[in-house]
Length: 79
Image 1 (cartoon, helix red, strand yellow):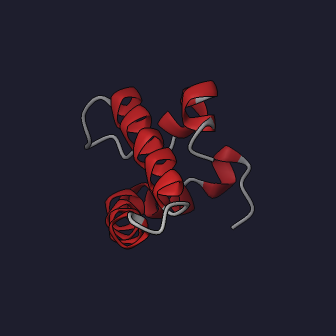
Image 2 (cartoon, one colour; image 1 turned 60 degrees about the vertical axis):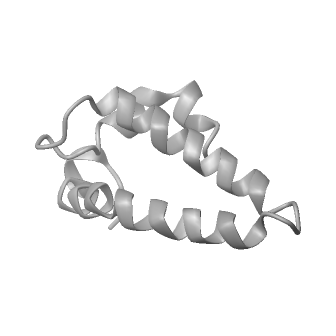
């Protein structure tokens, strides 16, 4: 999924709440964090930090998930 943030950023930008600035930049940053976190889980030396980083990412993107739930019908997303 992290790579899709770079391939189709407009899809993810639609669910960034309007109160947040620079939706495209936020999508690219979250995609990079997701890819780095996933890669970090592959290495025993970095899996613990990667896990905490991915947990922080989950908290950071939670507002977009809540916003997306409110737009589910408009975006044709099953709720």
